Length: 149
Image (cartoon, rainbow, N blue to C red; front, side):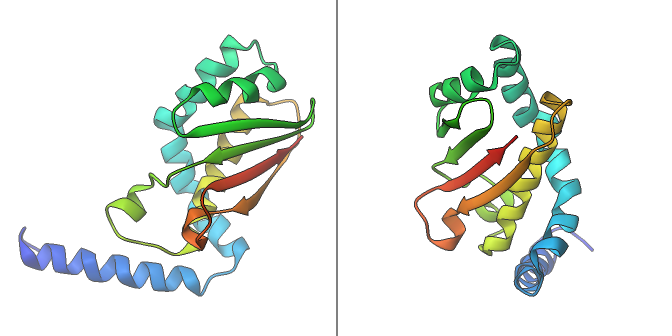
């Protein structure tokens, strides 16, 4: 396919259909779909942002989540020391939303999968879960996740 309007039309239609398809998927299916996408994203800037801060905090999760507040657009909260934390993002920067126009809340599974990837890399010796509490794409003011170790 040559560049130009045909190419753009194809991808505009494809991304519209992709967003509609997301709405038909359950959480487990979205998790499976986005796990690879999330790894790719997390391996780049996100992983290094978190890794540098984690190393600076010498692996202390309480300090790590407290210092996340110093980063633009991210808040970290210690809910229960050594065990329960929250991450809050005040804008959605996902290119699938900002550039492709996908607005399905199912897209937020990618953020959750990204956090799973990052924390598996940072905290290899502990099991944890990530729970989605609020998302911008559902109409909330922030994307809010709880990580329980």
